[in-house]
Image (cartoon, rainbow, N blue to C red; front, top):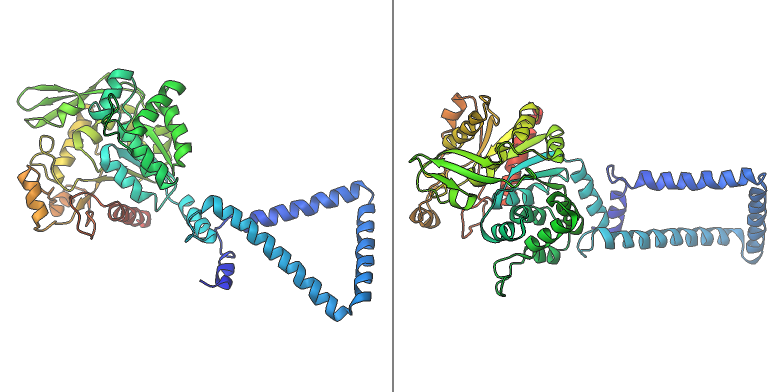
Length: 438
């Protein structure tokens, strides 16, 4: 792009630069005028006399026809040089990548700041995948994350340090980070050796230490968000020490999130201890101001439904007038959602709400994967007990659901069948714009 075209782009609306440059210039002019009035206008007289004397001296050396253009060019050159150096310093701070122009960075940030208020509810890798795609469309994102994990590194830290599980929150912070990739990689780094360290991620240890220092996971998340320059906010679903339990169809009762994901019989009821945990005010405020509320993707019983065990969150979602969208998984999860199609997932959500005494649908729209067709990768998943989550769109529409299907696995071949961040975010924003028009 030529310099002239880049210069013209600075005149486009929405950069929030021109108005403040003009405001500061007007402020300087008023300050000088006030000082002059205070001094009985004497500085203005002195300045005019000085300028007149300088012009007389200059025009005595060179004729006016030569002096005028030279002084004009010199002044313009100084202005351009000063502005160039100023914008260069700002670009180094806001857009350090050599290929990114400051005007482009400001325009992109302006678009993000004007983006919708999106609340994404869930946990696990599904939520972090969604967030990494949504941050291309808005800076006003709130991730409400389950804190029921009791396996892996999070489970060890929870048992030994008495902190809430940081794993899902760490993933969401990394997904929304605008900081240097190296810092994000450090936050996600998992130790592969070392007595007591093996299996832990640096981010989990960092959040656990900050929780001990600040006194709460919420404060630790706020501090970490500043370090990682998080685009939006990440909020735990509750500050309570939540522990999941599930009742199975065969009468067995499982305690703990890690065991529920390996259930040998269909899950008929999900609950937690303590019952009816309180929601955080920031989560309730975000839902109240939301333009779009999302649930999923993620493990149905261990990442999504635990958030609906917080009654205040459910009440806030019911009161919201924002469009609500449930994003369904691509594949079933052995031991958790065996044999469930999209309608089965929705029935599980409604059954969970019914256990709380709520007979109203919380999510009346669903985003599902298009037919995956046939592929060797799909055969590999079937060998491990997973099947595509099928969607009978006509049947769901008869039941009053708004159904949207999209190729959420992405166009490029991958080694796994998972949501592609850009594809799922694009489908979500299409849903939002469609409901905005309606």
